[in-house]
Image (cartoon, rainbow, N blue to C red; front, side, top):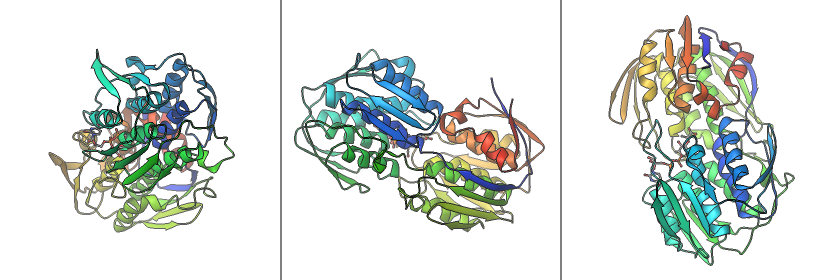
Length: 427
Ligand code: EPZ
């Protein structure tokens, strides 16, 4: 089992290219199921989760040609409309094939995604919305079995804001008969990236970026080539935030660049909540059209925060900013409002000497002068990023086990950090 070996105490200097967003790539790859014509997507991140989804789509009969950052998908004729348990259990985002399969083929059998480390992650909102559009859905032997001759437009109000729930219903609605309104829609930039691509495929979606999406169904969607800017995955805001936290914790000066800023001019606007917190912590952060720069030459000040749906502070950044708070000056209160069990990194941070107390959805951290390296274990994707950040500023050596969690959402994290001067290697 691979591990990361990190010797902390090094400041980070240099510049990095930010990859495409995992949570935009996954729904966009599933959108290929909506059309008989091919889809070409660029700036796709080279991640395990993307490879897993490509395997699932190929198993259904989608023809896929893939280079590390560019994917061509042709879903002209499928051989199966089933997403099997053995693949879905390794990646919950497989649920995103449900809406497109039902909308274009009238049938789908998708394994119920199990829970995961951070929570039970139910999908009843996805099902409720599709039933509102006329789908007949039963749960048999751990599978969601959905049937619909043709989905009908409906007004859907989800009980809570759900990112993949909004994406599943949005994709289904593009081919439904009539108008669908999704109230309480998720406003994450990844949802908008998907919506603009769907419109480039011929869908008729309005209200993009708002919590009210209005979709006028059409009978079919056409393909899109990579020449269309809508077929470019947006920069990964969580990767940007993760590296900003790494510099805020270790000190240094780093530039993070987006090679696609020409077609994504406002790519940093979606990180306001994170940048604001890191500025409060004492980091100097400049944002420009094609890059952002962080300078940190002092011990961070502790910052409190509460996670919220976009545009609030993202839950996917909670563990990383907690790592900064571990050695910051003062105490901080961190409230996780989205998932019920997203403090798995706390026990591992404590092993490095962090002083954190958890009570339900609230963690209180007293910043300590220094952390000390020790063997620790990753439990989920963003928790593993948090452990890397803490290890980078711990004294001595840290070994992090189960780093396959990290590879799900970050392209060769250790290579990128090594380029910035960190002493880190995969063993
Ligand atoms: C997406 O997960 C992201 N994954 C997650 O990123 C992210 O943490 C999450 O949104 C919140 O921003 C992808 O986009 C592939 P939700 P998702 O549905 O859609 C509850 C990462 O690290 N809920 O918005 O599964 C749910 O339990 C991953 O990249 C229901 O109760 O999250 C949670 O408490 C982790 N019933 C809350 O809503 C439902 O039917 C938000 O979940 C749906 C959701």
